[in-house]
Image 1 (cartoon, rainbow, N blue to C red):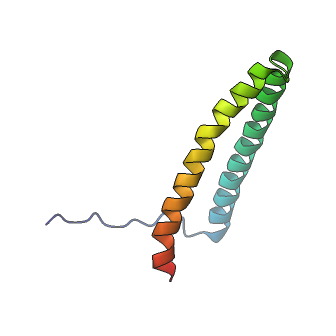
Image 2: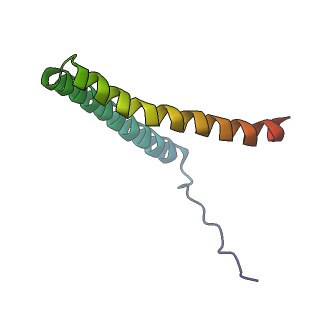
Image 3: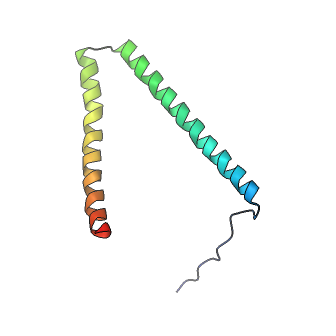
Length: 88
């Protein structure tokens, strides 16, 4: 049997420094989320300017949405079947 490594304490022991570190991490995540949303908007604007509301644009959007929809349906089903017995 293998031995487990000892658990190390990740906090500094100073509650103020811990809060500042957590706030900094939350700010980084929030900033990256905003950047992601802005880039997504830019992608949509460029796509609509380039392709527009044509048959090609509709086919492209549909081709991208169908696999995502199937994935979400399968994942939701798998999570439901895994979580309902645990929570019941």
